[in-house]
Amino acid sequence: MMYNDPKIFREVSTVKDSLLDAVEKLQLSPKRYHLDKRFFSEPPHYGPIRLYQIGRLYCDKDTVIGKHPHIYWFELTLVTGGKGTIITNDVSVPVLPGDIYLSFPSDFHAIETDPVDHLEYDFFAFGTDRPDLSEDLAEIMRNHRDPESRIIRSDSLRSLIGNAIAELDREDRYSKELLDSIFTQIPIHMIRCFQKKGFAETPSNVSDPEILCYRLMNYIDTHIYTMTSLEELSEVTNYNYSYLSALFRKVTSSTLIEYYRSRRLETAKILLEEKRISITKIAEILNYSSIYTFSRAFKDKYGQSPEQYRKNI
Image 1 (cartoon, helix red, strand yellow):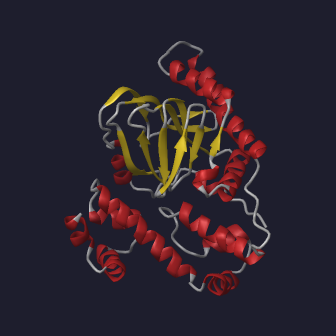
Image 2: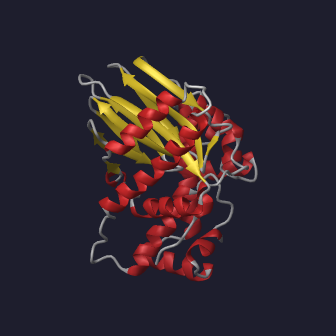
Image 3: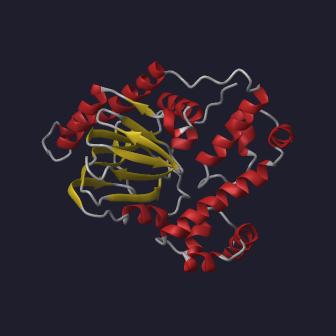
């Protein structure tokens, strides 16, 4: 059974500016060349596409792109030279020239360069409200949760993003029309690449209930900043919540609420380690009712308060 979830890609007004600011302030260590156009707080629209970030980076031997959160955007990383590693949710994936890697909303993401053959890449972060694109992107997310399955190759995508980087600096009467066309084509070409690549086959020994539980976990993982009730799982699967809850407990020996609480606290732990936003803002971003509720939940799981944890890092 498949589910459609276009709303994940819509602008979510409740996502807090403080987390966006934290992403915008992400500092990079030394690099040979860096072109970076960022629009996280107020992304411009080009046709059906919201542009969050686009640019080009040539790494130095000491360049490190530290772990940082994606919120409600996708990002393509197009390797143009050198070698490196893309780390998504603590899973490392080696990349080579010609590789194009797709990061999802709610991913935690980092990039490391090879110390000798320094990484060079273009990047493009986007979102969309167009229903057909949203449905196909949701399909990709469901079937490529494993970071190792997210590499594609496409000369068309490389050319389009290279043209977009060049065109953004032009200001003639045709620039906006050209960018509308280019940015609309990029997700379409990307979707076609994933459709051609196909989805990872489900092992024959995996049951339908296990597949459904996997999708429930995937939904929670990719909605960690916006999810306010587990009842949303009923909406996206068309199953009664009581049935989903009982099935999840039977298959995983855990409960949906336990999984959600654990994933939320794991995200909080990473944000604390980044030291870019306050503990109060972390509680707010992750939809805790109060700083006290967040602190108590964090201490119950990790044995120390958020303040103590951050101080001891």
